Image (cartoon, rainbow, N blue to C red; front, top):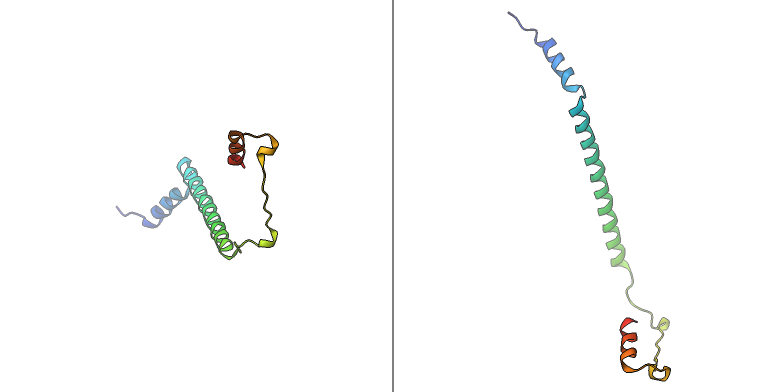
Length: 90
């Protein structure tokens, strides 16, 4: 009895390539993995760009654009407790 290897291999290759229920699930999972990987890569790129921009930013304050104010809350009728509460929230 002689086996026809060529036709047998062609048949098995065709069966392996057919998408059944498991094949569709596998394809969906691969697509989801690729989409998630791309999302993570984009997020990482944005984080790196933000860190580089933060490094280059000038963090000093121009003293010409600073205003100071002194408030005397006692003249406005605030007692010590209310004045302390107000300054703690500001």
